[in-house]
Length: 121
Image (cartoon, rainbow, N blue to C red; front, side):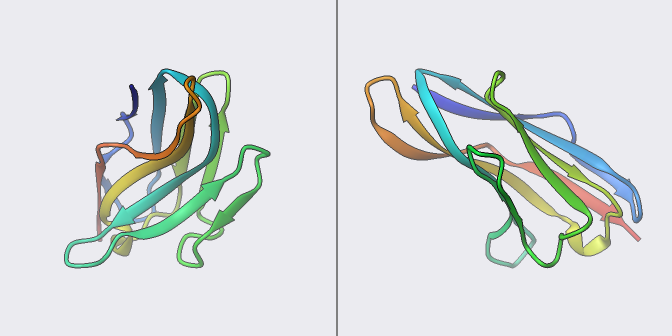
């Protein structure tokens, strides 16, 4: 069984501040492909914030480009999201996401449990 566990990093911060989210995959993992962070603001649909491929190619939503940085540590099966210059409109629940192939060679998309980030003005 595979799980994604988000830890630390969330909470309340003032506008202009920074937070760092972490998300670790564990279980019967053969390989991890693209990892990503999504976010869902109150009353809105979940949206993609950033992705990072297994080759470390990154992509960002226009709304976070230049402020957020996604990275991964393959030895730890962990993906990070460094969030700088936070704005009130960044307030959302943040979810990590990963495309994982298990040791019995099944590939599925897995989600973390979600972390609340609140940015005050």
